[in-house]
Length: 306
Image 1: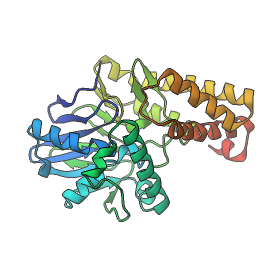
Image 2 (image 1 turned 180 degrees about the vertical axis):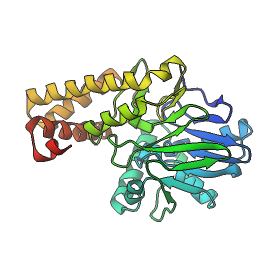
Image 3 (image 1 turned 135 degrees about the vertical axis):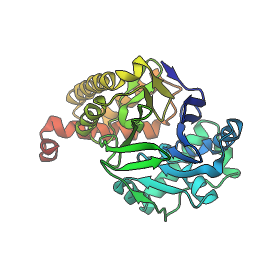
């Protein structure tokens, strides 16, 4: 089963935000941790939902960034400005990205662009949501554990969607937070998200497939639970294999990364006009994915090493 409804998922676990972009809250006594950051425009909605659900914003003591893409870090600037005592966790690579002025500019431009696409750009008039340099926090990597009361969020390195991607697993809840590294549960399918490196992406799915999961907590389009959660990673891996074959077929036919990427992006967004990303952003994703596949097909040194 899949749900996009904000509210309590299970004791100690909440979903907040909108269907297309959400965050999770781990609740344990007087300490909360936000997992992932969603898109910037959900800030007023999340703050209102916290009030409606009787969750105290001042009990948020930790925030975990699963990767540094603009659509997964959006509420973190607000939280850090409003509650400077909040401790932020992310991978070393994510902190590197968030200390790069060019990356910050891109994050802010993309966030504002998608907010405008969703008719939510007026949020910026009432909230300070842009990223600035200077984020401080604790670097986490494979094997690290973040405690939230007596719950433990175990960190796994799951690159492929991005070079900075990590996942979190809470064994007490059998809840997995793979961000886009687990594939996106969109409508009746799983959309692969091997933006950075398809080879590593599939390896990460195999790693996540070994976990016992009752709640697969995606960042886009809600969470999956029950039987569908238990075999989600197996289905996500199959979807990734199918998409890889499609990309490879188009590249072999065109032998042009840009032409092939545009074909993929145009077809997908024509079939899914309500998808949340702008054409330019989605084209950039397809271009990046196609570059990796082209290197593999053409047998470049870099492709052979991956």
